[in-house]
Every structure is written in structure tokens, then in C-alpha cells.
Length: 65
Image 1 (cartoon, rainbow, N blue to C red):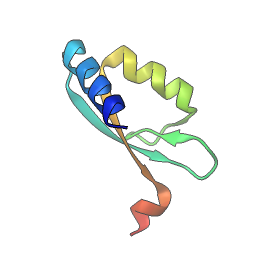
Image 2: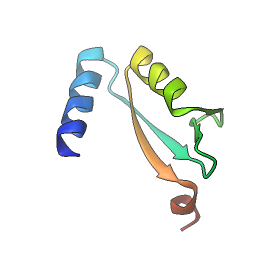
Image 3: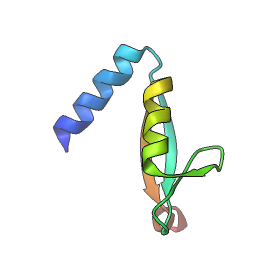
């Protein structure tokens, strides 16, 4: 887990964006963007790499707390 985090932080640093976004993992397996757009994890991953963001995930249950 730690190595994955370090790798992803390095990728954001290299991309120059350094932007962090909060995403929600839905119960149906999709993820929801900060703008409310539902998409698959694969679609979202391509978007993160393209714009150099670092996604932080919460489940719908976590947000209800």
C-alpha cells in the first residue's frame, strides 16, 4: 500500500498538477467524480493519468458517517 501511494504521488509530482480530488466508490462498482459523474474505475483511471490528479476514495457508507 505504501509503495503504491509513493508511486502515485511521484506521478502527480511529475505531471505538475498536484491536484487532489475526492471520489466516491459506489455500491454498484462505479466511481463518482467530484462533479457527480458516474464512470467505471478504468475510465476514471485514464482521466486521472491524463490530467495528473491524485484521487482519494471514500465509500458511500463512509460519507454517511
